Length: 106
Image 1 (cartoon, rainbow, N blue to C red):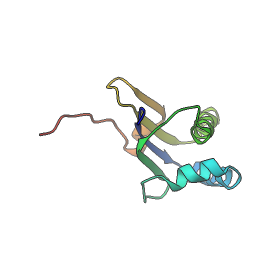
Image 2: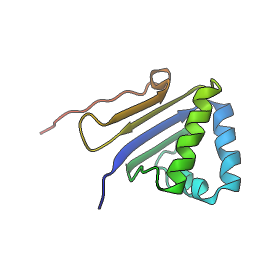
Image 3: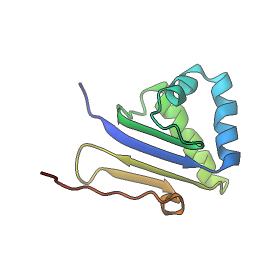
């Protein structure tokens, strides 16, 4: 089964165009995009994904996000691991109304 994460990504239109252009040349990235569960434009969501750097599609996506950060593109990224403290944020999630809400419900 393995360790799984929830991952949400919101991109500005320029970054989304850049992601899709890269996906034309990197089949693993294209597959990752295709497998996302969001129907909203410029939004991507994976509810239960193995987000390991050792997987090529994840490594490529992580390097893409680092590129966006270093070139001041607007985007928001949040990854929630299974462990309570395992939260990764990149970019500006709050600019896209993204936040973490962990709760117990009955």
